[in-house]
Image (cartoon, rainbow, N blue to C red; front, side):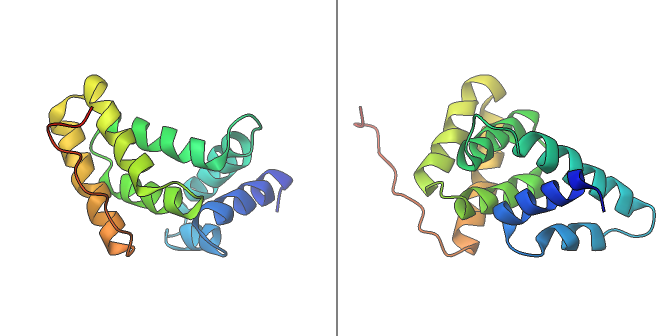
Length: 136
């Protein structure tokens, strides 16, 4: 196993839990396992392992990117879990999605907020109450 893959697995497991990197590869079949391994090496061994941002900051940035791209609900659900695991609060996660509306539009932001709130509830995390129309 390469040092890059080891580094990527360590960072992936830090975000998602021990053994999850191997699980990502094993859920693929045959040659498709190579793509999962590439993702672990590049995304987590090269990018997530860089200095300068915390894992929490990286997860919020990832959530914002996924919302803006749209159509990536399984990844958004997974990164919501990852964000909670690395210490992001439900408020930070939801506010990240709300912030994207100005760039991604209401349809994508509304679809994403549903995925995120459902994921938070599924993980047993309390969703913060609405601020309401009189909030500053």
